[in-house]
Image (cartoon, rainbow, N blue to C red):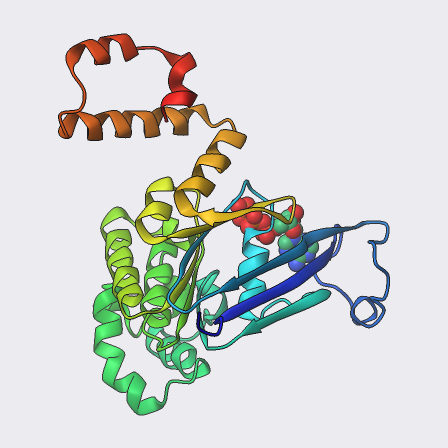
Length: 284
Ligand SMILES: Nc1ncnc2c1ncn2[C@@H]1O[C@H](COP(=O)(O)OP(=O)(O)OP(=O)(O)O)[C@@H](O)[C@H]1O
C-alpha cells in the first residue's frame, strides 16, 4: 500500500452550543478530557486513512458531523484532540461561495479565488474563458457578484474551484443548489477529476450520487464513526437505521426495474410483490 494521502488519527472536536466561534481561551485551555457545561463533541475519536485516488462518501443524518469532518480535512477547523495529516492540496467544494466578495465583479472574484488557491495570473487568464463558459455566465462577468442569483453564484464558484489543480476534492451538498442540467455538468466534471486519480470526499444524502462516485463510505452518528466500509454496505446501514421508508421504497422500485430489464422477474413475481410493504426491508 502507498502512503495515505489523508490520515485522520483519533480526532475530536469540541463545540460550544451558544457560541459560533471558540475563544482564544478555549483554544489555550483545552487540557480537560471531557467537555464543559454548554459544550459537546462535534467529532469524537475519529480515525481512518485514505489512499490516493479513493472516492469516499460521508453519510449521516443532519447535524452528525459530516461537514465538520470535511472542514477539518480542508484545514478550516483544527481538532482539539488527535491529528490530521493531509499530504496534498485541497479543492474545497464546500460552502464554496463563502470566499467570494459580493462587491467585486464576477471577473475580479474569479481572479481572487483562483489566486488564493495558488493559481498565477497567467494561468488564470488562460483558463478564464473556460471558467466563464462552464458557469454559463458570459453576460455577467462585469456584474457585482452580489447581484447574481444563488444558483449563478454556485456555478461561478464551482467552475473556479473545480479548475484548481489539487489532488483532493471535498464536495458537500452545495451542488443541490444548481439546476438539473448544471448538476449533471458538475457530476461529469467530478467524474473527469476522479479519472485523473484525484481523491474525493463527498457528503450526500443521495444514494444515486454516493454509489455513482464513491467506493467507500463513512457513516457518522453523533460525531462518531459507526461504519467504515464499502459504499453500498454503508448506504444500506444508513437508510435502514434512519427508517427512511420512502428511500427504501424508491430503492426497491429501482431494483425491480433493474431485474425487469435483465429479464429476472416474471409477472407472477411482480403480483406477489405488489404492496408487500413488510417484505420491503428484506428485498432491498
Ligand atoms: N462552529 C460551530 N460552532 C458550534 N457548533 C457547531 C459548529 N459547527 C457545527 N456545529 C454543530 O456541530 C454539529 C455537527 O454539525 P455538521 O455541520 O458537521 O453536521 P452535518 O452532519 O454536516 O449536518 P447536515 O447534514 O445538516 O449538513 C451540529 O450540532 C452543529 O450545530
